Each structure stands twice: as structure tokens, then as C-alpha cells.
Length: 264
Image (cartoon, rainbow, N blue to C red):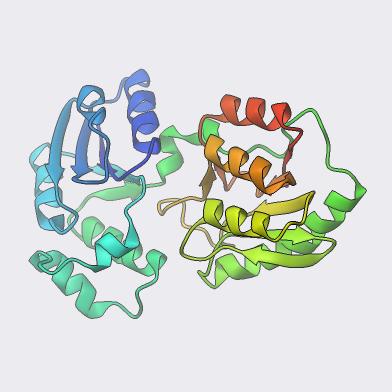
């Protein structure tokens, strides 16, 4: 038996389906306004709660005898912070926070869950096959200029990630064109495209001490389409730390548009 605390996006659905294939009994607590309704069909038991009802979520897992869970999916930070009536557990967490960074918020929630005797596992327990594997993932390899931009951009992206600012950059001729902020990778790509620098490189990484229980960076087909529109020719990812959501579709769309995808 495993529990799933599900946020938005497709990853909770993929997790749920893979857990089912593995023969796990899945108990899901889905966040209203974030998680997808399709989780109803993928779960042996499901509870729907608002993001401010952490106490109810923990009680639901304990009622079902759940001893281990994974937290999977997006929870919009503004939605999380704008709550006016957090339950007592969340209120206590908010009072102790050193800052409002994503990792700090979710880390505090994990600590509270584990205090109740429920182990929080890495989300990759049923998503390992989606992690970018080291090497060139598309038919085309990066050319000499792209490799130079990757070498320049990778340490910059790591510094940003470690400061919890963002996890991606766009580089052209070893010049930083754009860096990811709260708006996310796709919006960063969109803005860099407006600058009009074709054949730039996008580098996406995880934190050096990435907690694999917390919001692992990922890309989807939409990211590739944004790269195409921005005329970015190469996407470099940190191997083993970035998720490829719908991997086959991503590779197919990248090759169709001449975009090189490589994991370092």
C-alpha cells in the first residue's frame, strides 16, 4: 500500500497508473482545484481536500493504515500563500517558517507528515523511467557552439537553482539571455524568444542538494513547442534529476523541429 498526495499536472496520474501496474493499493489525497479528476479511476480510495486542510489529509492516510506516501504534482505557490484560513497544522507550520521559498514550505509540510508516522518517499519511486538518462536523446548532437554554451550555462543554472531563484537559463554565444524566475521555464523561453537570438541553448537543472521528495524539475511537449517558437536549437538537462513528461512525444517533437536534447 502506498499513499499519494496529488497536486496538479499529469505526473500524479502517471504515478498512480505505475503504482497500479506494480500491484500497489493506492490511497490518494487529491488537492481540490489542482489535481485531475481522472485520479478517481486510478485510486483504490480517494479523498478530495483543499490545500489548507493538511490535518484532514493526514487523518485520511492514517485511517487507511498508510505508512508511506509520495507528494506528486504542482501546487501553485500563490494559491498556497493566499490562504486566509489554514487549519491548525498549517497555521503552526507558517508560524515557524524561516522564509516563503517553495522548498522551505514543502519541506516543513513533509516534516509535519513524518511526525505523524508516515514516511514521505521520493516521487520517483514510480516515476524513475521518466528521468532524463545521460547522453544525447535525439538524433542530432549539439554542435561546437551549442556545446560551448552548455558548458557556460550549466554552472550558471546550478547557482540559480541552489539559491532557489529558478532552475533554467538561456545562453547564446556564452552570454546569459534569460534566467528562470517564479513564472517558470516555459515563460522564460517565451521571453527570450522575443529578444530574437536564434540557435540559443536552454539549460535546465536541479538543485545540487535536490530533495527528490519535492517538486523535481521537469519538461513536457509544451516546452519543446516553446523552444521551437523561440528558435532555441538545443535543450540541455541534468541527467537523473529532470523528468521528461511524455518522453516519447518530447523526443519526437524535438526531432521534428531540429532541436537537440542532451542530458549531462
